[in-house]
Image (cartoon, rainbow, N blue to C red; front, side):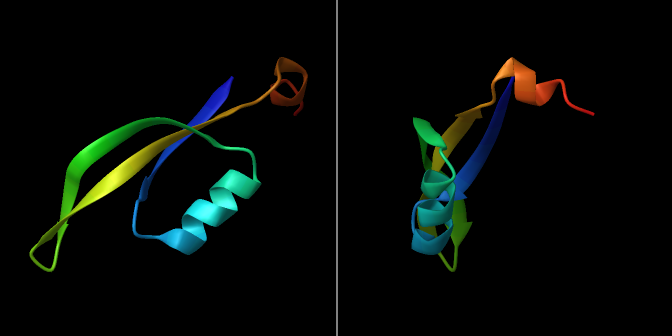
Length: 57
């Protein structure tokens, strides 16, 4: 099982949190969003969750 997310490359605090939690970079979407007239890139992150953890209810 895996969890994926996208994070604005300018959001240093969120990126630090996600990397600390074990997320890994798997892609970069250039010019993914337009903020105040400026294009911002997004990093695509993935966290692989072991099956034994994913099966808990």
